[in-house]
Length: 134
Image (cartoon, rainbow, N blue to C red; front, top):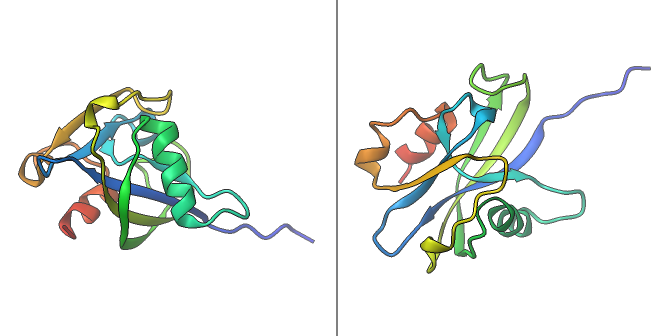
């Protein structure tokens, strides 16, 4: 009997600062395109707990007021470094300490931007769709 495979459910967020800018990170996983920080939900973990944990692990930021704004399928995107089927739970949230960023090894660059600036950048497709929602 073959093992059945399932999509990978992840969380990520547009993190806003007091200037109403949001954080984008550049990562090799998305072939150098900008996206949002986030990651996988651990077994037994709620999606909101995973969001707070992943944001802290990837950016060192503390966040609050997380609100789910979009659920997306991302099936075998050519932009991602390996073929995967993801279900993205995309949130928006807020940080009071945008200067506290310390990136882990998953991202190599970050920028705080407004929507107009973001729309001119090399974004991965799921991030483009998310930004359209705000």
